[in-house]
Each structure stands twice: as C-alpha cells, then as structure tokens.
Length: 483
Picture 1 (cartoon, rainbow, N blue to C red):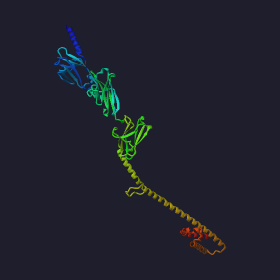
Picture 2 (cartoon, one colour):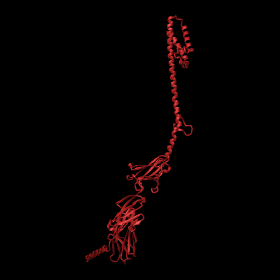
Picture 3 (spheres, rainbow, N blue to C red):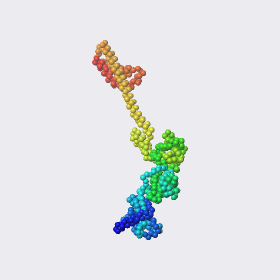
Picture 4 (cartoon, rainbow, N blue to C red):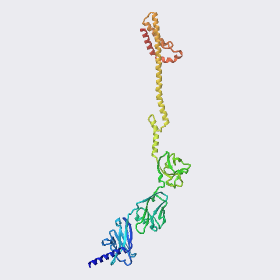
C-alpha cells in the first residue's frame, strides 16, 4: 500500500514538471551588465486577480525571487498590468551571473501555470574589432554595416559611442527614417548590408560609432567604427617666425601633376575667405622649382601687418592635401636689439673718449684717426733722417780735417831738415796763425777743399763746428811737434 502511494506521488510530480516545461513557448530576454533586465509575462483572461511571481531554476519555494504581493525585493521588482494581462518582473544592475533560465508563474489551485524565460546578459561595450576611418573636414564618409539574412526585415540604426545598451535609444538615424540632417541610411537587402553616409564633416564628428541591427529576440548585433576627421590641410600645416624688416621665405610643395597649374598664396583665417597676395602690386616674390615640385614665396621686408595665416596651393578646386597652411608670427624684440648694436658700434672706433652727446659721424672719425696715426709715424721718420744727415756731414768734416793736418806735418818736417829749429815757440806761433787764418778766411781754411760753387752751402755747416775744428787742429800740431 505504501509502495503504491510512493509511486503515485512520483507520477504526480513528473506530470507537474512536464506541465511546467510545456505550458507555454520560450520567452527570450536580453540585457547588458550594469543595466536593467525586464521580463514580460502574458497570461490568459480570468487570471487577473491571481498571484504572479518570478522564479529561477526548478522553481521550488527557495527559487522564488519575487511575487506580486511583495512589489519589490532586493534587486527585483514586479508590476501586474491587468488590463493588458501582462506582468513584468525587472532585475536591476545585471551581471553575467544573472544569465540563465527563469520561470514566470501564476498561482492557482492545483497546478500553477509556468512560462519559461531565457535571460542573456552581454557586456556593455563594443566591440572586439573596430574599423578605423580617416577623412577630412567638409568631406563625406560612409559606413558599411553587414548583417545576416534573418535580419533583413529588422530595424537598422546607427549611434555614437560604444555602449550597446543605450544605442537604440540614442540612435542618430534608423531605417524607419532614412534621412535626418547630415545622415542618410540606405539598406541593400540583396547584399545584406546597410550604409550610413555623413556629409559636411567637421572635427566634431570624430569619435566612435555603432551600426546596430535590432533583433526580435536576444541582443542586437553591432559593427563598430572609429572616425577621425582631420583639419582640412593639417597634414601640411607649418608655423613660421620672422623678424620685422628682414625677408622671410615660405615653402609650398605641390603634386608633380600640378607643375603647369597656377601657384598662388592667399592670407586669411579660412581658406574660403582668404585674400590673394600674388597680385601685380604685391611685394611678394614667387619662384617655382619644378624639379623639386615646390614653389617658394618670399616677403622681402617684413612689416607688422604681415603676421597671420597664409594658404598656398596649386589647385583652384581646393582638393584635400594639395595645400599648405602657414602660420606666420613676427618678432619685434630682435629687431630693436640689432638696431641698437648698429648704433653703438661706431662709438667704440673713436680714438679719444666721446665727450659730446651729438651723434658721431663714422666717416669723420675714421679720417681724424688716420691723420693722427699718419703724423705720429711721419714726424719720427723725418727726425731720424735729419739726424742721419747731420752725423754724415760731421764725419765727412772730420775726415777732411785729419787729411789737412797730415799734409802740414809733412811740410814742417821738410822745413826742419833744411833750416834750424827756431824753437817750439815759433812753431806754435806759426800754427796759431794758420788756425786763426782758418777761422777768419773760409776760402783759405785747411779744412776747406770744396769748389766755389758749394762754398755758400757749406758755410752754415762749418760755423756749427768751429770750436770742434780748433780742438782737432791743436791736437794735430802738438802730435806733429812731438815727432
């Protein structure tokens, strides 16, 4: 009897579990980590006033998560819409461990009504692979987003960022509205891909994008893109510095196929409104070097108003990459320093200290210095030449005096041999007479052997050495007497 009861109980439990599993079709629910997951469970008419609940696993008493009589419990909440005959259970702050099987239950006498629920929890970031796209402002870009054949009739959309959980809510455009502002969406079902085009790009359009396909069940399918919108000519953007009053060259490369194009330079904050600087009245000089595929524009003498933004190029259509942006800045401090140096330099070339605050004249200073140095060198030279001339005349004079004394000695010797010596007094007397004659009569001087044509010129010289002649004459006669 007991055995029969036990078998009957097992049979009843088996039937109940079978009813649970086959009571209704499977409900698929998906959510993302950190977000809320909502499970919507419909029920039949007549059960509006019955208790509803959400349970997990085998739905035992310990597996019940929340009932309509509780309204809210921990991370779970429940709401019964009796008009629509749908009760919804919400799980907040989802995690990967929340994924799995759930049951929607309706309490009734006898066997409860169960509906199976499968919850999928995904990571709230996308994706493992991202397609990088680079383009320039004012141009257009297109994103091609493939999908599976089962999603041909599904909703397609695109959003910014990389959070799938909010992508659909913040969609920029969808297949329900294929034109919105600068965005356009086209769906090619034959090739199973939809394309999103963005026109009139600016740098603000740079960032992450997600192409999404909304499925009827499960998580949406995404394709990730990373868009970088560069400044129009940032590839060839340069900064240049110059000094007021000096020249500065600006180099502008161009494609080889543009060698015959008109080259130009314009000035302005934006290329569309810049002013052409290569006019007939321009101070700017353009030189084209075809061999190096570049041209240079030189400003011969910089002015304060030359600072600013310049654009140089070789294509009037403003094609991307064919232009150079040059930011020219000017330095005024270096100019004043150079001019101060130039004004100070002549002051240090003065031979004497400057006592006047008047502006020095470089040419006059140079002439005065040259004259000073010339006088300093010429005067000593003239004095040296005159001294040498006087010494030469003096030696010549002495040489003549010595020659005359020798002749007189020889004459006196012969006289002494033929005549008797009259005494030393007579000899001295004769010599005094001879020397006095030399002093009083210039043509008859013993020291004089020049022609009459040079007498007047030599008198002045002989007068300066009269005393010296007397000394030498006396010495000669004394020596002759001793012999």
